[in-house]
Image (tube, rainbow, N blue to C red; front, side, top):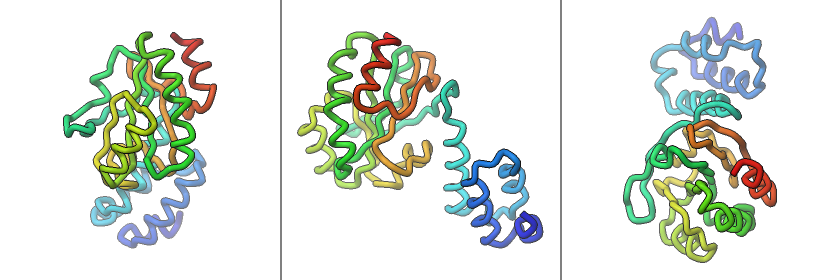
Length: 196
């Protein structure tokens, strides 16, 4: 902390700040220390990653979900807010992710059971190859809206939600609040059965 305070223009200060942020200790005023860094450091790509991590920490049950826009399989822009008034599962996945593909049958089953009960899924793919993405959607029967910017791990929505591993999901209420996270297997259907 002393180094960060004394060297606001040094890249190491940002690295140390990232390490402090990863401890998740409320004692540290990460935002305050970040604000004191030089403008050059605060506007760097690495700083953007830290800010995304801090934003993602705010994505707790009860918080507002971050709205976003990304193109669907036909290149049409889709926003999360387009689904306002419905329960929406934001499902982060990728065609190359084995655990995602193994989880997809559970997600398909839940969708089939609840799609007529005010429930939607918005799939966000961390793919970079469009053909692989489209093939996985077809092969796994993912009939809901799927979006991607085809930037892989650099997917802008993935970065906004600080996705570091997939599969990952957030269940959003009709009012746009996060009501659950990382519902897998039978847990998704069980939660939906209680809510819908």
